[in-house]
Length: 134
Image 1: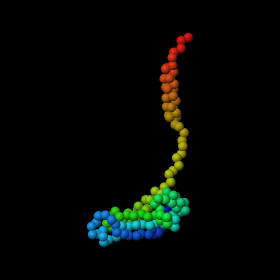
Image 2: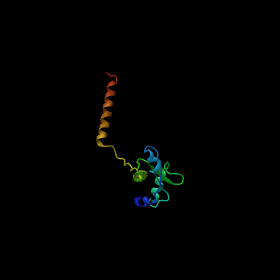
Image 3: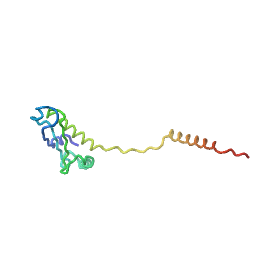
Image 4: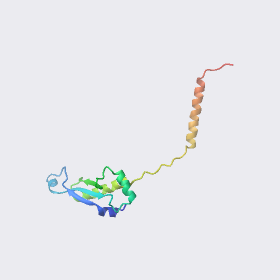
């Protein structure tokens, strides 16, 4: 994943954001929408594109765009920065591959504990049996 190339491929759109802000909300477009085309990106390898399209299938549109919006602050510049960070976090999360767990044998301590419990159980049950006289 090449951050510099991806950053240059981003399409940013602004709109008027909802919420508090009084007259400021009605005048200034502070909401930022970032569109990133996953399949046409030159900053991602083919394997990464496939992995992202599988893991982020619910976030990618039919046209192949990943859309991230931000309207947290009243500043357009801060919202752009937050949206870009949000996009990269999403990409990083989508590209994460869970490491394969290596199975290991039972430790000597666990094996000894299990055998001890087994022996105690068998002795307990042996004592419950009726005594046989010769």
